[in-house]
Amino acid sequence: MTHIAHKGDPVMRTLKRTKSIGLLVAAVAAAGLVPLSAGQAAAAPPAKAAGYAGSCPAAGTVTQGWHSGHDGVDIANGRGTPIHSAGPGTVIVSGTASGYGQWIRIKHDDGTVTEYGHMYERLVSVNQRVSSGQLIARMGSEGQSTGPHLHFEAHSSTASTRGMNPVTYLAERGVSLPCTPGSGTPGTNFTTWGTSVRVRSEPRLSAAVVRTLTGPTPVHVQCQKRGDSVTAEGYTNDAWSYIPALGGYVSNIYIDHPAAWLPGVATC
Image (cartoon, rainbow, N blue to C red; front, top):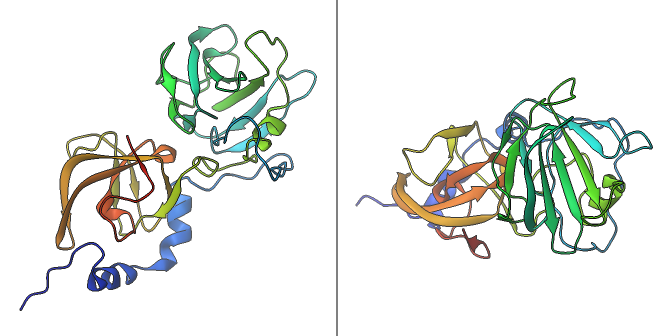
């Protein structure tokens, strides 16, 4: 009699565990989830976060910190690197600006404001509500810039004209620089399994592929939703997980958890 494996089935779990764990480190690096070396020492986060639970704004190398002649911190990486909201709030600016080329400002629920500059693509609009870790833009070199990077600022309020130290601001909210997007976001972390796992812009098989994971990859799932049914390894699932750090959705079939609908993860 042929055994049909289902998610959570011991046989299914055994099959999944036979995938090469040795690929993990290489896969993480290939997926761009490991931050590059920092140009300065990272500040250790305090025991208790302030204001809100923060999220990493972008992965990359810290090339310039906050000082008297520089009102923020610069995080350099390749053009198109995802940029994420540092916390929940409302977009108050999204447009063009002298020096920045393009910029975004978000007013957070604690009254503080974060600012993002030099992106080549903005993905949010004024008055839009965003969640912590939400993809808001893609890194570029617009305006007065010598290469692709995110200029990130933190302000005490909308009336502030001088930004506070963003390294300290993020550390107070549980995020140290350099960082991995998703690592500071509240929620549950999982690991994918399998090779050539496609990350799509929407939970549809016809949607554009934004990334391909070469092997098991640790990910942060922000939320999940129903979409197209996917069949693999003898079972079918129509649930998809949104992964902010990858800027898209992965079928829950490829999330290494016995439940088809991930427990403790919100609906998108």
